Amino acid sequence: MAVLRIPEHNRTLTDRRAIADYLAPMGIEYRRWEPAHTVSAEASSEEILAAYRAEIDRLKERGGYVTADVIDVRPDTPGLDAMLARFNKEHWHDEDEIRFIIAGRGVFHIRPAEGPVVAIETEAGDLIRVPRDTRHWFDLCAERRIRAIRLFQDPAGWTPHYTRSGVDRDFQPLCLGPAYLPRAGAPTRS
Ligand SMILES: [Fe+2]
Figure 1 (tube, rainbow, N blue to C red):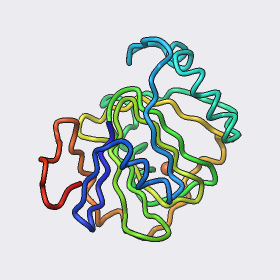
Figure 2 (figure 1 turned 45 degrees about the vertical axis):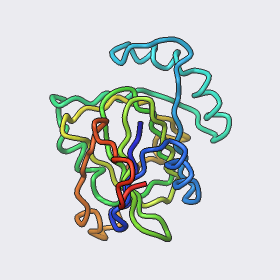
Figure 3 (figure 1 turned 180 degrees about the vertical axis):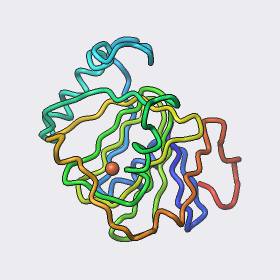
C-alpha cells in the first residue's frame, strides 16, 4: 500500500482512498490492482502482462496507450546509477507516466501547479498515472529494486524534459516502508 507524504505540512496519508482523493485534483490517478489469477513477482513478463490483461486493456482504451511492457531493475542492473540519474531530477514528459508496481519500491515526488510538493511511495499492487506535463522526479528505495508494468502512447514521447529548477535537491528520497504506520491520534498525521 502506498504512503503519501506532504513534507511542507508534515502530513502523511496511508489510507488508500485518502491518497487517491488527495491526488485526484492534480490529475494523478492512484489505485490498487488485483491480478485475475495469482502471479509470482518473479514470473516472466508475458505471465505478468497476462495476469493483468483486463486492467491493462481498460487503461489502454481509456488513455490511448498502445504498448505495455515490464521493466525489471535490480541492484546489480548494469548502468543502474546512470539510469536513476536520468529520473531523480525534476522533469516532465510529453506522455503520461504509468507504473504498476510488481515488486520493489520507489518514490515519486510530484510538484503540482498549485500546492506543496507531494511524495508518493509506491510498492507492489500500486498503480500510479502521472499525466503528461506534470513536474515530477523518481527515486528507488534503499533496496534498489523495482519491477513494474509500464504503458505508453508512444515510447518516444517518454523522454524526460528537465526543468533544472533544483527543487528536487530540497527533498530527501525518504522511504518509510510498509512497517511505518502512523499511531492513532498522532497530531501531525491523518
Ligand atoms: Fe518521469
